[in-house]
Amino acid sequence: MPIIRLDRVDKIYANGTIGLQNISLTVQAGEFWLITGHSGSGKSTLLKLLYGGEFPTRGTVEVQELPVTPANLLPLRRRLGIIFQDYKLLADRTVRENIALVLQCQGYSPLEVKKRVSYALQRVHLADKGQCLPGELSGGEQQRVSIARAIVHHPPLLLADEPTGNLDPENTWQVMQILHKLHQEGMTILLTTHDRQWLSCDYPYRRLELNHGRIQTIV
Ligand code: ADP
Image (cartoon, rainbow, N blue to C red; front, side, top):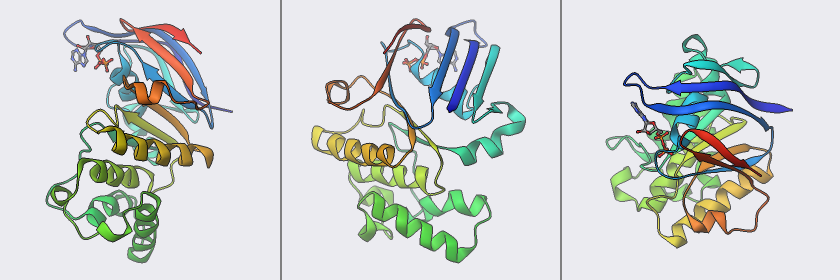
């Protein structure tokens, strides 16, 4: 079953720069895609079009048959989680508070929030770090908190924009193991990367290579 469909999508930014050109792509539920390409080839733009950070200039984008439009942002965000290279954690909130925020915005009861945050922290091997501030954690730990935040509402889709770009090989390996496990449990994952550690790993990824905003290869 398709979880993502892009049909003849162009993204041209306000200053005239071409982000993506004529992209048609179908991602089936349960696939793990690596998105590669030189800097500026359109990798982040593709993810932004999926989470509604940007909207196409032409063509359509759908996630679980929901058109990605400004009016659909709320239901869209329930269907996906996002992680970034720079984690984007709130520095003045504890780890638990950072993760809980997503659920509080979605109206979960305090008891349900507590249970789900604890479970998400276990999934990323940080059960003992809930009361820390992000600044008290290593980069690898902060990225694992951001994974917990992204999956705490059990979305079917995870978008990861260069998630290991700031991490050393050991921490990269830990993040890889966590994402592989989530994938094995059925999550669909799209991840942008340059990192050899992902590209040379023997795992059943699909591969999409972008070049100047166009699809170069799909494997
Ligand atoms: P990548 O993630 O592969 O490095 P991006 O998707 O960030 O590439 O960028 C694709 C192209 O779009 C680049 O030429 C970039 O400069 C341009 N671009 C990205 N965001 C904007 C923006 N907000 N305004 C104008 N141009 C942008």
